[in-house]
Amino acid sequence: MTTRLFHFSDPHFGIENQDALARLAQAVSDEKPDALICTGDLTQRAKHSEFDAASEYFSQFECPIVLCAGNHDMPYYNLWERLTDPYRRFRKLYAEVGSALESDDVVLVPFVTTVSVQPRIPLSDGVVRKASLDSTIMHLRSMIADTRLKLVFCHHPLLGPDDDKPNPTIGGDQAFSKIAASGADAIISGHVHVPFDSSRSRDGHKMRMLGAGTLSNRLRGSPPSYQVLTCSKSEVISVERRVLDE
View (cartoon, rainbow, N blue to C red):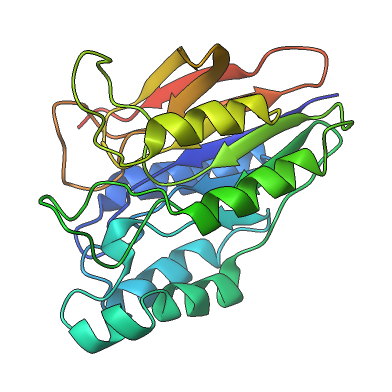
């Protein structure tokens, strides 16, 4: 028995690729995956209208919808709300359409890599906060005897594409090492708008990194795409990348 997950990221409602999203919706309708996962940047500027568009899109599906917030999902024009309650609009969306998934084959564990402010440019890159990491590690360690695959999901890749260059995610190296040491089989993310699949190591701990591309019009050299993850306790995670050419 297997669990099939459709994973996409960065639709950026407000500048979304409507054709790509329609094709994903048709595939979900036809193939009926066990869950649909979106790893952040649901909106472009976190406007109420953009969250409403995201809610309308996700409401059409019958399968569980697993979501996390990206750096674009905190208020862009309302600085007071960004500083005092940055995830309020995302929480409203999650209450409307979001859910968790635990199947016979896989457990999805959330990890927060976004912050409302940080002392550097660009402001969009990831930051690992101790409280967020501790929560994810505690979740993983509580399942240490669980034989199911454990997939951690977040918005930012924990490691950059090149080990010889500075890591764009502050605290990402340590987080990668601790998450891998705590029993995670893979970590899935988005943010960079380019899909990837690699096995990486830190401090002797190895883990697979899986990244989805974008379904927005903010392309960075890679066409719109999403991926299908087939998960089984007895096998490695199988990844099928589906490119939606312009």
